[in-house]
Image (cartoon, rainbow, N blue to C red; front, side):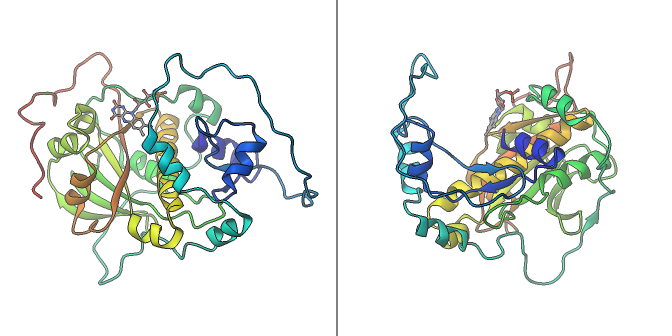
Amino acid sequence: MLANLLAVGGALQLAPRLFTGFVDADVNRLLGLDAEREAALELVALGPDGSPAPPVAALDEIGHPTIPLSPSEVDYPLLREIHAASMLTTPDDVRVWRRGGGEGGGVEGGAPRPVVPLPSPRTASGRGLGDTIQRRGSTRQFGHAPLSGVELATVLWAATGDVEADVPASLVDLYLIVNAVDGVESGAYFYRPEDTALEPIRAGDLRGESAYLCLEQPLGGDAAAVLYFLAPLDEILAAFGDRGYRLANLLAGIAGGRAYLAAYALGFGATGLTFYDRHVVEFFSPHAAGKDAIFVVALGRSAGAGRATIVGNSILPRRPSA
Ligand SMILES: Cc1cc2nc3c(=O)[nH]c(=O)nc-3n(C[C@H](O)[C@H](O)[C@H](O)COP(=O)(O)O)c2cc1C
């Protein structure tokens, strides 16, 4: 939803700006939310800056009658605990939060590494945004037809675009497994947005490994390319405190949502996937050592009527060497 909102806001020249730091209880109260069941996650400002709002007198409590979101509620106490532990309680907390991050992740030290350049992304063609959002879904079965190098380059470019926000928004790194992309050798890579190029990590047919990493789901092996969003969580938590965990997930979610939109704009498919957290990091290490896996999006062409070939168990349980 946020990726869609940022895209539409940008297209309408409303300069969308993301606010990740706010006094949670005040915003929840303003919206009349029952904060045990529902809570504000982030704010998006749209339109030009106006004059500052006048000071607000104490607001009356809002208690909308609401229809239950679900006929049978499932409680996740841990989720509520995480949310409560990452709240900001005063305007001073918000000011400290905004000063939190330095330059963020993605900066690799040491000797320059070889890179594989990608073709220029297609930035001005494909489906219109409204049509793309209408059609955007999650592909349920990929065939093995390849993507073009331009298609992959365009998705990577879209996923890693700037986010106008109250904190640095480049805290998530993009690793990928390429299974079938014309002109790009199959293998594992790190994406360098500043060069729009791939840094090779491991060459070879990795469909089995990719399916395994994606919780042993065939989608992860049948996809033409699988994007793994990783973040240096320890560093983010050190800089931002517990709310940094929200931030890492939020930014990976935006990047993943943008990858979805780019795929559907270009006429192929995508799906979010769940994954074995630790094995993903091990697979991309030593490059990814110290980072955490946050989100995965697989890309490819829908299988249509034909069943893809990777489902056989012989290929799925192959564990990556630890
Ligand atoms: C965080 C996240 C994790 C997901 N994990 C999986 C998964 O492990 N397997 C799967 O088949 N689909 C997965 N999906 C795709 C969802 O099943 C799909 O988005 C959902 O069914 C809604 O369908 P739609 O995207 O077509 O609207 C995931 C989606 C998200 C956003």
